Length: 367
Image 1 (cartoon, rainbow, N blue to C red):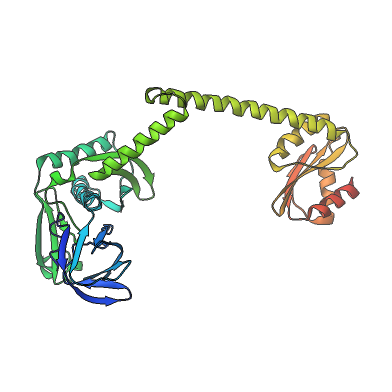
Image 2: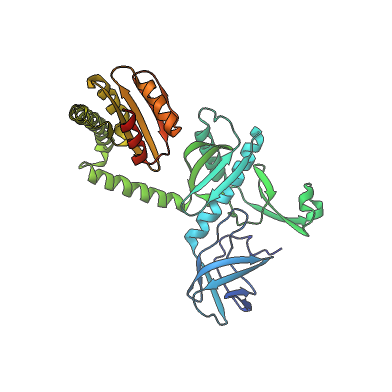
């Protein structure tokens, strides 16, 4: 097993090409890590050309760049990306041990340079759990625990699923956690820098907990600061007034929605009064007007009418009867069309797949 990834601060090397196929290069040495084991790929350059892709073939990592490479090869990994990818891996190892001692385990992790989260199989989060998690990792950071990386024969590892490997790499953080892992890790827990729990949400596996650490915290802080700054500008106030302005805007929106709803209802009333007096047996309205329109129509209608609303290929209808014959009218329509519906003597409603023109023709004939 390669020792290339035992020191995550090794960001540069000079090497030579050993293979080239399908646009990808393999080298005698590499400082790049390709996505595997839940850890994203490194970013960086080879001979000043940006690395556009990394892929594994067995234990060999192949590198792709936009251009042609010639020996000697100078590789350089992006420091910020390396720290972002590595520090969260080590932080989650610490949490593996934390949850194991509680009788739980991390089921899934999601890590890239914009999002870091893990899912834990807890049905309920105890009060103060998120703060406890944050304090636990930050205490490990303050203790400056050295990372121990060791190699043993696969046949000597207690878990039988590792017996097929010639060698197993073990990553240990003192008494906090020890487990097989092939990814990059910090040399000392102080390299994690900081660890912040952002929030948590219920998931199918328990709870998903969003976190940030190291250089990603800087990026998140900049992003949130810019968001607050732009929001303050849009709200015509300063950052201190932002929350109050948002509450005011939300309350104003509620009032506007009420006013709009009242205006819509008034417009429907005017529409009902006009159409109730016409000789038209069928009135077409929009789907969102149908319920309110039929209710108001019943209050002023002197005879019988049908109200329809098209919803894609489906036709919604309500038969409205001032003399209580809605069900009798529906029965006659059903005999001729086979439609289904239900209601009472004043209203019968339903949905059907009849063409609108055919439905209107039958209603006109029945009424």
